[in-house]
Length: 87
Image (cartoon, rainbow, N blue to C red; front, side, top):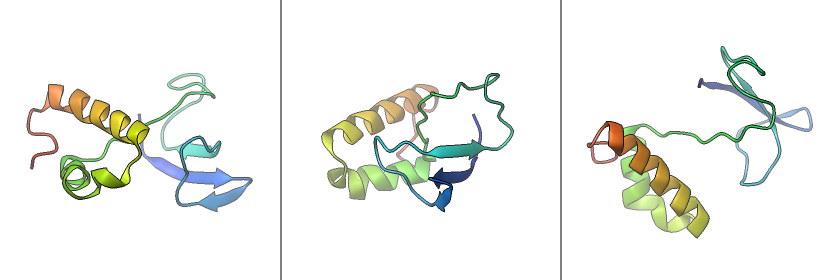
């Protein structure tokens, strides 16, 4: 839907958020109530090269739920581009 401009936790800018953490997220060129709703959940989509690195080197560092979500993202993107995560 867009690129993340900033993440905040308690009005402090942060670089990352953990699973289940409630944060404020500003996204460029997006209007709440039009493209997204206030309580929506978002997932990031790594590019193909990043996905390949995660699959090859870091998958073991993800917990089972994170692995499931990541595999779902990969499957969705491979439906559009069969080479996603291989190149």
